[in-house]
Image (cartoon, rainbow, N blue to C red):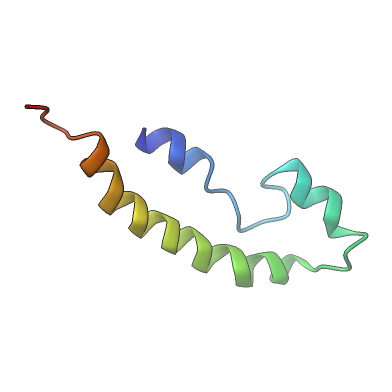
Length: 62
């Protein structure tokens, strides 16, 4: 589960996902706009994942 969530945490660049690339030009965004919003969002997602994943998918079920 951790690998699946980590693979979907690509927010920090416009090349991360096709929708990000599609709105780059028409929205008038720059590469730095994605970094400013994406890096904090990746950090928040990481922290939440580290807390929540072991609760729902424990390492040692029992």
